[in-house]
Structure formats: structure tokens, C-alpha cells
Length: 112
Image (cartoon, rainbow, N blue to C red):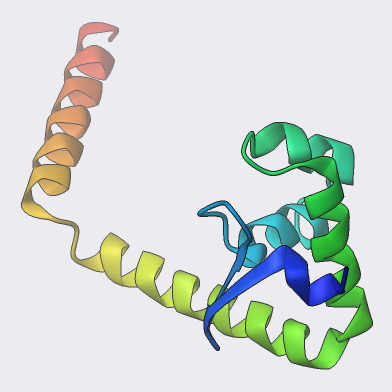
């Protein structure tokens, strides 16, 4: 079995663990950013086996430049999307945030 057999290459920006809907970026995020072990990661993603987690990590280590760029692009995209969401939340989210702020203000006012 080739290492690539563990993955589905949907587009150059979308590589998934075969047989799951989990993108390799999610596993790599837990490994690289959150410093989780392969065992901890496999517990987080119930549809991914420990073998698949190790294959994902190895795939990244084997081609650090390409997969590193893939991960960096994903991280940049998600950070921009989060910033845009924070600046312009959907109406429902804005309403909940206003309600939460009002409740917090009421609680603080009552405690004085």
C-alpha cells in the first residue's frame, strides 16, 4: 500500500482521509498547533483510525514543503474567514451576542 492510498485528493486544496469527511488539515492542526499525540488525535476524530492519523503525519513529514504550504494556505483562509465572521456576524449571531451583553450588564448592575 502506498502512503497516498490513505487519502482522497478531491482538489489541490481539499485532501481528505479516505473513507471519512476529515480533511488532513484538521489532523495536522491538532498535531502541529495543539501538540497532540497521534493517540489523542484518533480519540478526537472517531471516524479516523490511529493508523490513518500516523499516515497523515508521515505524509506531512515526507513532503514538508508541499503539505506545509497546503496547511499554511488553509490556516490563512480560516483566519481570514474568522476575522470576517467576527466583523460581520450573521443576524442571528449578532442578536445572541447583543442578548448576552444585555444579560451580562443586568447581572453586573444587580450585583452593585
